[in-house]
Image (tube, rainbow, N blue to C red; front, side, top):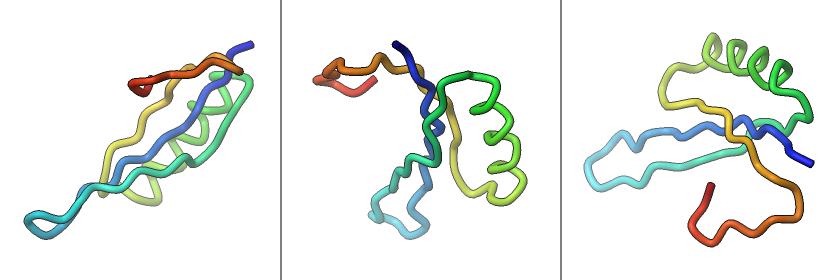
Length: 64
C-alpha cells in the first residue's frame, strides 16, 4: 500500500538558524494531497511544500 504525505519545509529566517519540517497530512489518494497543497500555499508561502509517495511498512534509511 502506498500513501501520500504532504510535507512543509520552513526556512530559517536568521543566519545559522535551522530549517524546520512538518508533516501536514497523510492521504491514501494523491488528489486529496494535491487539493490540500493548494490550500496550504494560499495560507503560508514562507517555505517549500511537496508531496512524497511512501510505501507503508517500509523503512527508509536515508529519507524518501
